[in-house]
Image (cartoon, rainbow, N blue to C red; front, top):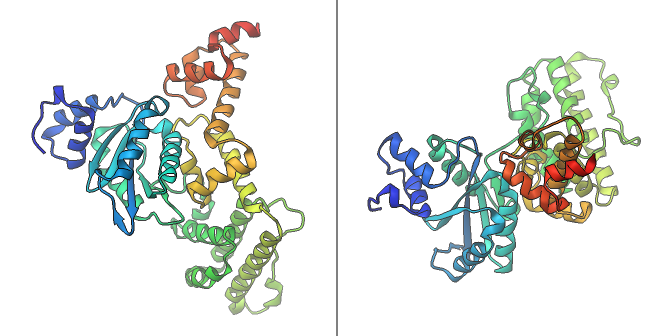
Length: 383
């Protein structure tokens, strides 16, 4: 790519230079970052789109991609600005991470309107140009792991997953296995168990009895909590250790107990219509209630944490919550903002930050849209 004066550089050219990593020194990277409006402290997102037709990636000149990008441009005001560039037939988007769910939903809507076979990869949120190459690699890795079920994939994993499975082991193996089991149960696909369980018990057999017992029980409890069965009166974990008087047979007891409980969970989920989707929404709402102050909270992160696809969780929200995830998150944040307006003498900037907005200006815009009043005017009316 030819050298261009950074002062006169367009945003998409600046993004292309970052992707190609052809800049000379830290100073040029910082100046490029300023061209892209990389405001200090504001988290940015990098998203890669791949469109496939008959097994081949479409180029930027294809009618499908041109049509999608033209429609995106018409909705730029809704997406709060973004920058796009092309690299190896990928479309690369540089956006504010705070609007990533709106951006993804818009992309999915346009791709499905065009009946395009799409895949989307997202890197971790970042606010320093030094991490650009790493984040770009993450997004490429994420899109490489996308498939027909997980069309939207992220590098971020286990954001809200219970960490107690790691206690005493220091090994993420257990979380990975637990997520695989949850996914198999959620899809009601019992045929996956014979592939997953041998890996689990091979590891269990290498542990001392107490640790093996705790791991098996905590995994079962995590699975029960995921499906909302931890308080289900018709389900309690069954213990069968009394059948094995010989200590050498305890590992057989662990395996028998674990499989017995999985079978019972599987049978119960099969008998409860729509349980998986409803419980996914319930779990998502719980996460929102406790993490709404995180400006980077997104449906994508929650889907990863619950072990389900973005598309599936998004459709569950619309079906069972009668709203989109973005609308629900905004509603929770606005309700909290109203509470703060009625309690004490908080400044608008303080409230904005407390409810998950890095920008007080954007917070005021969202507040006005919902209540037809600015936060200060709303507070005056409360008196």
